[in-house]
Image 1 (cartoon, helix red, strand yellow):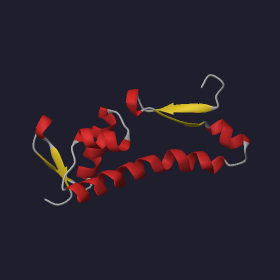
Image 2: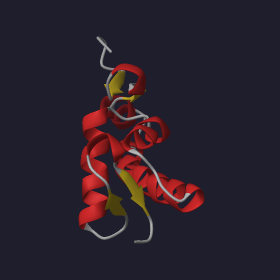
Image 3: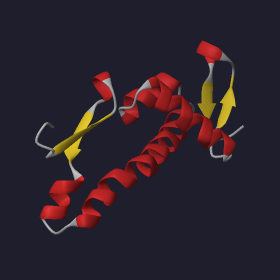
Image 4: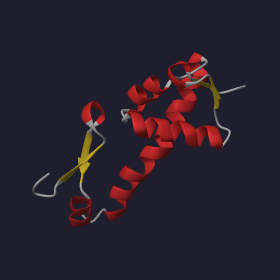
Length: 102
């Protein structure tokens, strides 16, 4: 990381490492970095939706573990999916679950 070859994304157990933009630029694959970083959000949305379809529901903790993201990012991601009508929220606080169909 100090040499600028890799970047850390996420926090604590959800932390992942990937090659930096500089590495992609030096190898001539500048769009590779964007593909790597950009698809994360789309993939995470799809993973949450697929999990909810497969298991009937998903909790914030399950979203965190499935996507390897921190609690705040999971909360924001679930809130975004709810606001776009892709999943539905049931319950409050610790009892909240998200489903694919109302």
